[in-house]
Image 1 (cartoon, rainbow, N blue to C red):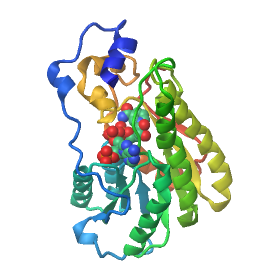
Image 2 (cartoon, rainbow, N blue to C red; image 1 turned 180 degrees about the vertical axis):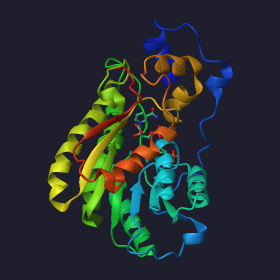
Image 3 (cartoon, rainbow, N blue to C red; image 1 turned 90 degrees about the vertical axis):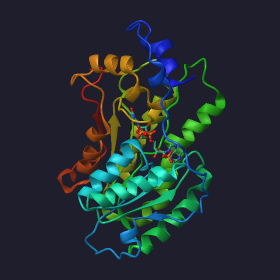
Image 4 (cartoon, rainbow, N blue to C red; image 1 turned 45 degrees about the vertical axis):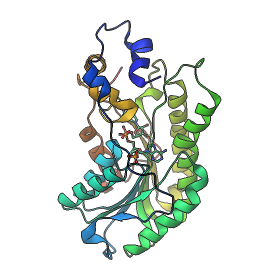
Length: 306
Ligand SMILES: NC(=O)c1ccc[n+]([C@@H]2O[C@H](COP(=O)([O-])OP(=O)(O)OC[C@H]3O[C@@H](n4cnc5c(N)ncnc54)[C@H](OP(=O)(O)O)[C@@H]3O)[C@@H](O)[C@H]2O)c1
């Protein structure tokens, strides 16, 4: 069931009677480009393909940087002079656009690699590609890891299938765990890890039992990882966005007026979040200003469902 239909059935039906217009409902998300293999060549910012970065230039890895919150974070970090390696799953054209935009705002360069977090068994191969990408810019290690890639799942306890549990567990927990574990030797001491949760771990809305439970696991994982990695000066935090207008959930929050209005009415700041509300917050938490923050969950929801 689509996110929009699910919300209408389980969540919005008692609060609103309006329905999405056909144009809103049929708006395409993005056109996936060809499915690439794990060993596909990196896409690089053309002006920086042979760049050897200075020792002072920080390097970030963001999973799911081709669209939405991850893309916004790529751009926010590029503005701050960070070289960003980001991943995409299927959407090579969106990854190219992110690279071009990061270049146009004066970033030091960026590079995109394919990764499918629904397949944790491919993480080792990905790590090899990532290390080779680092070496192509003159680095052996990197500074910031942002675990962001992901999709939603909508279904009640009764509706959720066993295979859904495996898929959402792989995407939102197992791959985050394994990717971070395999990259530990390559994160500089004093580096930062930021994970991504959701406001739905604090408030319980119908249909998010599986998705929110996996995100809750990441919140606990964050506290344990912060404790383990503190001795290396590495901070680990988890940011929890509220409802943000992206492609997520079929673009329901972005494209459906009654959903936007309803969530806005339940939010202290009176509207849904936009990607621009989020990327700068990730960049801030990665900055030196937040060097004493670790093991924390910070919600970025504009005060949703307080
Ligand atoms: N938007 C919200 O309301 C909201 C609220 C709270 C938390 N979040 C969380 O924020 C994160 C980003 O969400 P978003 O709103 O930016 O979503 P989005 O706009 O749909 O973008 C998703 C990103 O993740 C990538 N991705 C999707 N499935 C993947 C997979 N199996 N393997 C690797 N990469 C994959 C996509 O790559 P392609 O472009 O190649 O498809 C894309 O870059 C997710 O973890 C989500 O749970 C979102």
